[in-house]
Image (cartoon, rainbow, N blue to C red):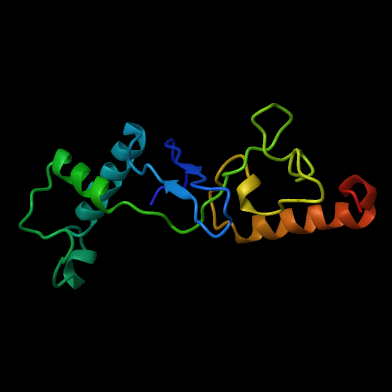
Length: 155
């Protein structure tokens, strides 16, 4: 698992209808730096299985099939095929002051009245840990701003 990856996915709307889900292109392993790091980690994990004392307690390796090739390119193909998300997407809404920003530094959605985003989507980078606590802090901070400065949020 990569805590930080160079590759970036994309979310696009299929329709203005809120009932139609967005298109999500994760783009896992498209950046060669990510792929080479995953392959290297995979090779390390396989090497650990041959070292004592771990090798003494391993009775069987099920994945990848030990009869398969462990050549770098073959492991790269395996990583491309099976890489997935840790189900912690974030950084999907650009925060800032430029024309491409979706929200400002206070979480207010640009060009939309009374709509605030206070979750992982406004994170500029994926944190190197579970995002739960970071999301709580974003919500708490923006919630406090709304409480003490309601006029800033159109309330």
